[in-house]
Length: 86
Length: 336
Image (cartoon, rainbow over all chains, first blue to last red; front, side):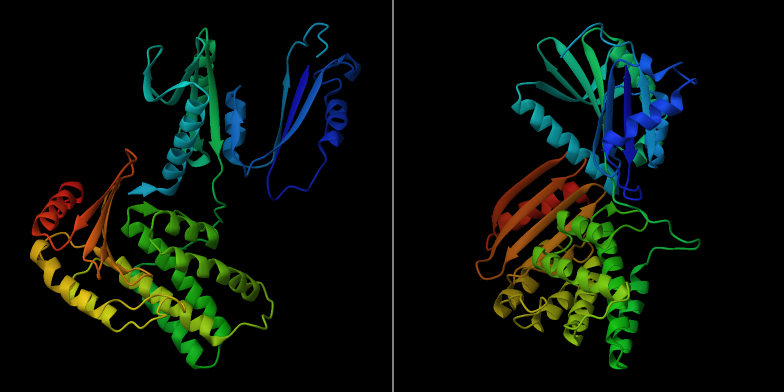
């Protein structure tokens, strides 16, 4: 499962969240996954750095990136929920 | 002195605590956690056997804290515990060019004089921008006099919001200044404003002068009261009630009896309704006494910003006993 969060601020160009995953998964091909067809679950979000943010899974890399206050993309790979259909 | 970001964090923590309480959670503040010696959680909320630690931070605080991710991990590793970071937004702080120094009071006064000279010489727009610059700097000086600092260059609206929130400026002044921000932006960004006139400049200069005068503790209380005697109806950018002259006489005679000149003297301002407000501030404590000149009644507000404890009580200022108790309370909170 891939969770993509695009953090943007007032200096970022406007973008639609649905345009993001394809490009990122293509870019990750061969680096992280052999084939983006392997990805079964995908969540993509956009979050405004100029607004309040509620962060639950805090890693050092996320803290360092949030501290800079520049736009960035955070990608998390986790095991996909087996056969779950919400 | 409290930084504006610390106040923002505290307000958010208060808001979150109230929100969780209303949802049936048990909420504790500043709790020590057994499994994390030396760490005090901003908020711990509990319900149905689950505990959540909530840390409220601005980016400024987060940059000064080097182990927040580690703390989050340690909390999440505990059975039935979870961690949440609430990262709250801060105003945009512009990068100042090298050598940028915040105005002191004298600099503000100098800039007001410059604005007046520019207006007299027939340059109202530059005069307006100088007057605005002086007003914004004076608002920061006023906030500093109340123990609140704003670092760096922020938006004009943010400075005014902070000044109004901490009662450093009157709400009526705040509203009028907010209206003038649009004029300031249009002029500064190269637009012609057809309904701009000299009155806006003279009003703004008057506001800046009043802010500067208010930022100084009343070294000479009587002289400050005498300044109020000269004010007519409309003194506050077109509104503002002139103070009652008999009431000013009474206050000028009574106040020094209970607050001798060697005591810790207050900031003295006139309210839009023509009453007098006296403000004492030290560290995170602020005390204000609103004096109704006509009724000779007072309202005493004490605010401990660190502990977030606010008290308010009414005083009969014809009573020496009430003056004495008020004087004692003020001394105990802010010294003097």
